Length: 427
Image (cartoon, rainbow, N blue to C red; front, side, top):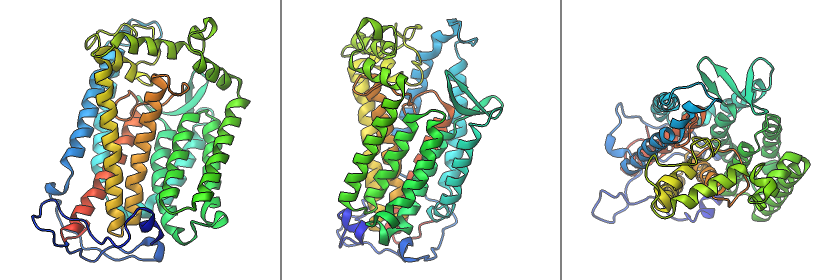
């Protein structure tokens, strides 16, 4: 009840179906009981899924971002064939990106077929598997790295990045934890401290890689789900301040992270423009060249070996240069809509007494929204430089895989919501 009240859902039993012309409340067949109260109501499952229960607009937005991202990855990476750093063809990154998209689509299709109840039963085991992968990446001979970071596990021609898988595991685990601890979420020792302990372990492993950006996203997901789950407001504020202080201490204790902050504050100084502020300064140059409508698709100059990682962390800078402010705003709006839709689906699930599913949906929205905000903020100079990809658009197989699976879970929650609102079964 506390969670329903915090989301403004007290007294609201069902949602009106968009396909009905009258305002009569819809029957909800055997609503799922809250897992926090020990409920395990069995639900009848239909043998086949109906396509009219799938959010076509959500699928279309995701597909547009994927296709647009593929075009921009090709545009941003085509010149890398001329770079002495890469011994590749002009279509190397495009081909690998397409393969990753195909693998991610297959994985997402499988994930969509698994009911939310089953995901909840797998949440803790998935989290344990994620922690073991974070440990494995630090083992010599198992993990691999570049530029001083160890973040990947080589699997033949593909590289697996455990920190990306941990984001998905964190969404499921935090939602399951909140449901199990619903009665004690206001208590620091019983409600927050256990979650803080496991997040501290994850944080330590990520900082050893190091990957502060991924840790920041995971903390945002966990804290957001705990807040939505009914954690005490004063306790949440105190924890937020403590976390901000901890992140500040981590940055200040690392000389190269401090240099990044100073470069962010003054990227145009003689020292920073050719040093720590090199990426930011060239990203801002790309946005400046693009102006309102861009220089045209494929016409970017900054991608010609001036802007490092243009096809991954700074792909939005290439979008800004080639398609201008209009193109960037279109991308921002797409992520805003996606995040908002995820929260709407989550609130709907909670109203149908499907707390775990609702928190998973909102956790996915937090993940996509926060990471997109950080990536675009870094590229535009609003935030200090941090290596995070733009979900669904940047080059990166692990990130693309986990993002697609997460969005498949979001579609699954909405699919089950629609079934229940029409008086059917969730499966």
